[in-house]
Length: 280
Image (cartoon, rainbow, N blue to C red; front, side, top):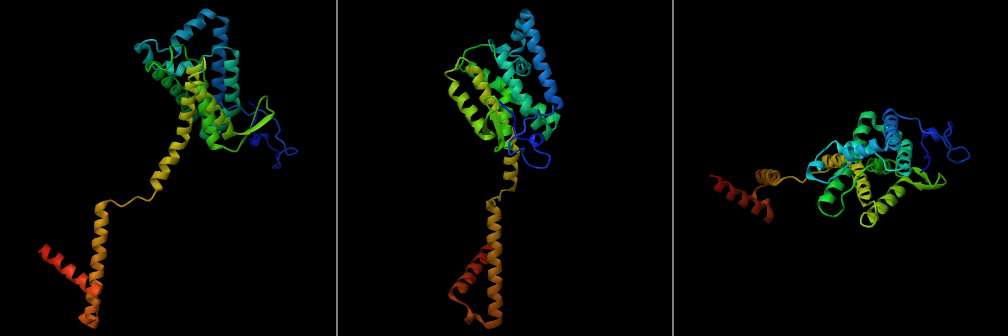
């Protein structure tokens, strides 16, 4: 995963240096900084003290061996700070480092943190449900991948055409294309990969991230969409229109006599007379 062409990677005069992205490191935002620190510290301690790492995994991973363990809700948060191997944590932290500040800078620290933890928690919830449904085997679910995938999904919706450089920063892709590719890989791997639980968490995180961004848009659309009048409103509007037509016809009779009425206007008067008799 590579650098993206945000404002701090641009020429100060408005263009790219030589038409290319200037490789610059994004400034760290507060929540991203502390997430990086906590994840790295927990990983180092777990790696350096294996016995303590085993305790961490048993008590703080998502591990739905029993119903009681599946409802220990703190696991939905704490599992996001545990990682199984260098490759696992390095990839997650790199993505967090390069893309996290973008969202935290736009939303603010508090909203970003809530978003991040919700996306990760949704991964743990889906994994637990799939285990109890018999679709997946019980195992330790650890890692920030659900939250990271939620971050990528949100970024792809907010900045779909932003260029992202993958494969050691040399191959450019539009952000939305990268998100679609990752979603497809996770979807195809859910039933085939040895890390099927992790892939399910990836999908849940991406779905949560997309929903988090799209929900306000859907609400605004629903609020601004023209509403179909309910039936009693339609009836009232028809009665008002009918009465206005009757008043016009009576004015015409008063001015020009009944002989001036057309057949349709005479039928309207007869209909009005019937309604009046029914009302009395």
